Amino acid sequence: TTTDGNYGGLGLTVSIEDGAVKVIAPTEDTPAWRAGIKAGDYITHIDNELVYGLSLDEAVSKMRGEPGTKINIK
Image (cartoon, rainbow, N blue to C red; front, side, top):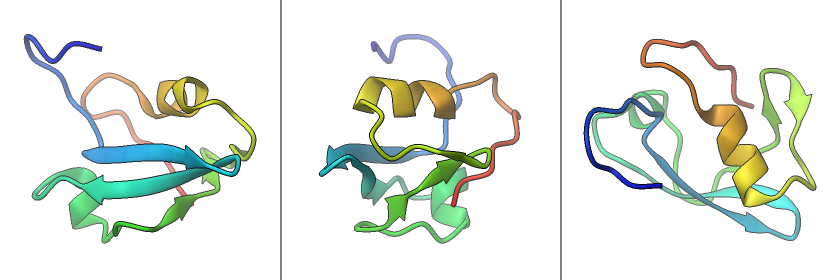
């Protein structure tokens, strides 16, 4: 995905590790950073849906939305 133009986001860099979504780093002063998400955390659910076993693209797709969209991450 390119970063040209305007976009909103959680402010997370993530990867997949053994089928789990792992946070590499939150970006400072973003919603993820303000929520206290730390490097090394694992995201297990997005909007109450288990994300274990999804591809990185599928998990990231579930975290995308228009700026201001609410999302519940566990």
